[in-house]
Length: 342
Image (cartoon, rainbow, N blue to C red; front, side):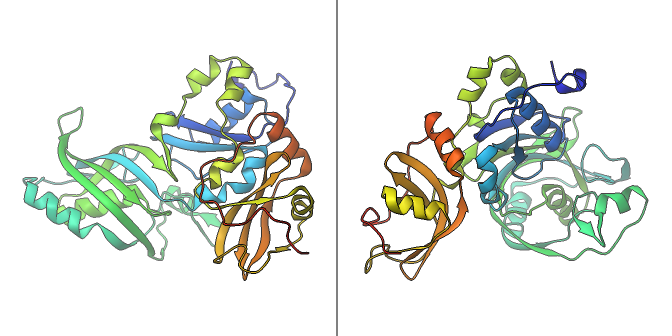
């Protein structure tokens, strides 16, 4: 049963560590989806990696236990979305949830027009955040001002659209539409991008649907639905979890012997022998070798390994016992195994 129907039923929480790739359903906020998954896993601690609007679906990595320490990596990650842009109709929220505020005639959507729009909206852009957003001004979320009928000044932000694909389409009601697939930097509002494209065409637009299909290397094909998760046994749900280190698996790997692993876990910097760590690195994964276990993240400056996010010894043991100790693919750091100096 979902938590909303058993709100008074007390469940026994437990430590759960890992990342669940959820295909967020239509109509739920990111936090509502998180709470349902947390309830199903009986997890003590959980957090998500960036919000999706209730009318959006798709990839929502959820972090549990030790994995929450590395969730910032997903917040900073580039993302890819698929959206249906309805032309000729503007709404208060720039999506299908809002009230219609304007209708305009739609000009012919030619291949030449789409090619021009693709060129204009690819690359570095400046974007004014929408009023219906969780960004804050003077301590209040913008959507609070919007719901009160007030529009406040917002500063344009720099974003990057890395790749944009646009094709002619129709919505289920037969309205003229454009299907867009956009890969972009963090902080990009696809609703605003859609509105800007509509204004560039001269007819206005709003999003009819929005789906996140990739974030930080995780794709929709890897995700599980809440319905499928609910139908599983607890052991099957646990098996869906990726290890916490999957959030940093794209970064180089440093392996420490038992003595230095213990010192690293206590927060001490480790200095290597001459040239041991090679070039400086803004982030590396750190593992102990005896046994093979993920310890946390660090950065390397002037051949010194400097801790950033550390697991507790209890978390290291729990993750290792759960079979999540294997080192994921990464770029090994040369000569990281020998003992380090204090």
